[in-house]
Length: 137
Image 1: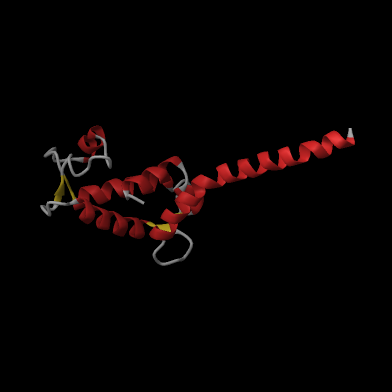
Image 2: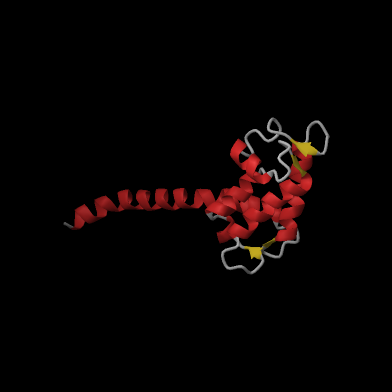
């Protein structure tokens, strides 16, 4: 019986290692986004930091430099339904203020404790991951 326990030890260790590695994979991806967003390095992400990142993302996506993003420029970033919902003037495009407003909305949804900042756990939530995807991080 003692031999059986020792024989199973390497198998158990492999399972524990695999479980830890799989569980840590998603937070590591989010931690890179967290580091990119936390520009003042205070350990949290503020709405201002998110708005700055959204503004930069808008500029990167605005390939025709018209000051708006159309469905073509938003392909893979926003679905058509989300574009329609976020487009208050219904012109089929988003200006920078409209795009930043979407990021702010995602921020508010991710800020579960309503303290005005996102920690790593909040950024790794479903709403936080949606924000990270929107920002292309």
